[in-house]
Length: 180
Ligand SMILES: C[S@@+](CC[C@H](N)C(=O)[O-])C[C@H]1O[C@@H](n2cnc3c(N)ncnc32)[C@H](O)[C@@H]1O
Image (cartoon, rainbow, N blue to C red; front, side):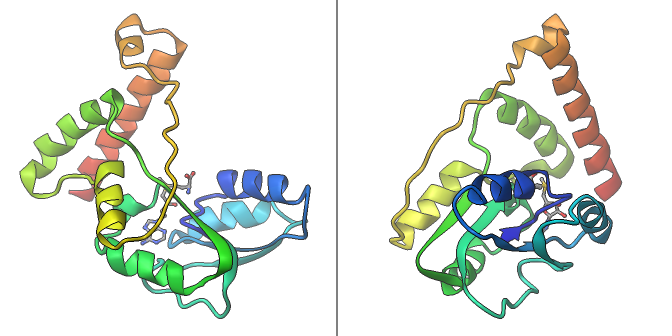
């Protein structure tokens, strides 16, 4: 099950890897119906159940071998309930994979603008807070820190990666302005 699958880019990459060794039945959840439609259109050959819902509102009908939640915890306020629900829906020896941003310099740059718009009342939580919660709940986990290929200095150099990064920040600011 992939929670917050968007239009399926990462879901499909994971399915492709898993299919090397087993038959894969996937449940793909996202509250954004238009993204799910894009996903559906490009995946005629996979066994995927598409669910248009938030994780909070969805009640799975069976348990899963693998649950992924990639960059979605920013949109969930009650992390403990979300994690408890994942644990309740994972099979024995199953695996839950949560991907969340760390606190690297790109994120600090982003936080600077986020804070300007939202003030100090709504900090965006990250890897550190997630580990604190898992420790507090005494849940065993393994963490991997993946180095971003983005370097904030590229913005000034305005090379190809820098342009991508500047575009990302513009898109991020536009999104925040629209949400306000
Ligand atoms: C930043 S995107 C990440 C998409 C994808 N997992 C990836 O890493 O490419 C976040 C996705 O989570 C979805 N989302 C937002 N709130 C959610 C919630 N409460 N439950 C499940 N998905 C949610 C959004 O619609 C969006 O598609």
